[in-house]
Image 1 (tube, rainbow, N blue to C red):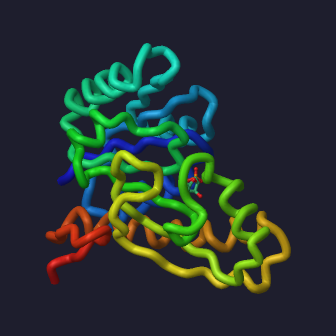
Image 2: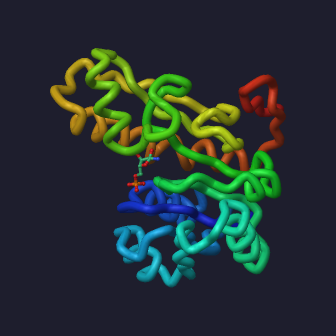
Length: 206
Ligand code: GRF
């Protein structure tokens, strides 16, 4: 069974959904630990209830991103982690971690990348930008993580019709429902099927 480290900074609804799917056998993995940058996130309550070990690591406590990465790598190694799952983690993953876990770090983005992505485009900022643009369609992207924000190989995408949404909050609600389904689906494929990277897309071999 592959061992997952989940990185999260917020309420943790994606983590909860993935965890539920692990328990029911829809995702073949073990949630080994939660790594977070804040001691106040809602996701911590959930991890505590499930008795999942929590590591609170503040990037600001390190002189460089490299040192921050070394600390993360130490934890990942000690827990024999196979895959890193980003579920609303608001800090940049240091390059040394990206290199060590090449194509083994997954992120979910609440829009159709490459639109509405990049530095500063997270959480409600994304939905506000989508709504302000007048777009009638938003969506969800699951992608592998490289050194540049929101630009790694795309694993899966799903469009969400937002024609009937009256504000960014309604867009967020519609998109989140799809996130909860798509993330587990994409994870299960990544964990159980062989794939290759062609250009900037993940291509499964069957
Ligand atoms: C989700 O919208 C996810 O796409 C983004 O951050 C949000 C996290 O939500 N990366 P939650 O903490 O999983 O509820």
